[in-house]
Amino acid sequence: MIGAGNWGTALAKLAADQGNPVRLWAYEPEVVEGINRGHENPFYLQGVRLPDNLRATGDLAEALHGAEVVILAMPSHVFRQVLGRAAPHLSPEAPLVIATKGIEEESCLIMPEVAAEVCGWKTWQRALVLSGPSFAKELARGDPTAVSLACRNLRQAEDLQRWLSGDVLRVYATEDVVGVALGGAIKNVIAIAVGGATGMGLGHNSRAALMTRGLAEVARLAMQRGANPLTLAGLSGIGDLVLTCTGELSRNRQLGEALGRGEKLQDIVGRTRQVAEGVHNARSVRQLAQRAGVEMPISDLVYRVLFEDLPIGQAVKLLMGRTLRHERDDRVS
Image (cartoon, rainbow, N blue to C red):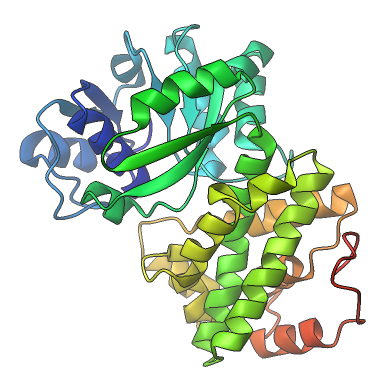
C-alpha cells in the first residue's frame, strides 16, 4: 500500500483484516512510528486499531519488496512523483490498483494514463482503478459498501474483485477504466459546489439541482473520452457523487461549506493536513474540458471561486442566468 492517508490506511486495514500481510508506505516518519508502535494512524485515521499484520515503512523499496498486489492511494498531485520513485521496485507482474481519484494538472491525464507513462504502456493491462461510495472512516469501522474496479483486462479485474471482496466491501468488475476514473475525479469538484450552496444557507432544491446537473457534466466529459454512460449511472458515478456531495465526512463538501460562509481558500487549506482533492481537480477538470471542447459551467465556476476570487453569490447568479437549453442536449447544459 503506497499512501497512508485516510483512504490508504483504511484499504490497508481491509487487506490486513482479510489475512494478508500488508506493508504500508507513509511519507511522514511520525505516521510510520505511530502505526508500528501504537497500531493506529495518529493523524489520518485516529481511533481505529490496525491489525498486527499491517506494518508501516518510510522506505519504498522495503514496502514493495516481493509485493504480489500494489495499491496506490497517494494524492493525485504527487501521484507521478511518488510512482516514479516506486517504479524501480515494482514487480512487472504485480497488479497496480489505483485508488487515487484525480486528473493530473497540465497533462490532463487520468491516473492509469500517468501510471502507463511512468511504468511503460504495458501497464495498461495490469492497472486497475478502484472508485465508488466509500468514506475511509466508515470502511475502517466495517460499514458495508460497494465499489467499481475497472481494468482493460477484465480477467485481471475479476481476479482482484475476488481478492478485495468480503463482508465489508463488495466489488463490481468493469472494463470502463475511463468512466470509473473520471467519475471519481469530477465528483470532487461538484461536491465543492454543493458544499458552497449549503454554506450559503441554500436548501435541498438547490443542492439536488447542482448534483443532477453536475452528474450531467461528469457524463458529458466522460462520454466524450469514450466512457460508457451506464458507468456514470453506477457506483463510481452517481453513487460516489451523492456520497461526496451529501456526506458529512466529505472533505470537498466541508471545504465548499467554508467557502459558502465567506472563508478564503488559503485559510481553509492551511488548517488541515488532509487534502481536498477537488481543489486540485478543479484546475485539471477545467483544463480537460477546455481541450475537449466540453461545456461544464458548474465546474468552471468552482474553479473561478477557488482561484479567481469570484464571489460565490455571483457564481450562483451566473449559473442561473445562463442561456436556457434542452435538458437532453448533450453538447451544452
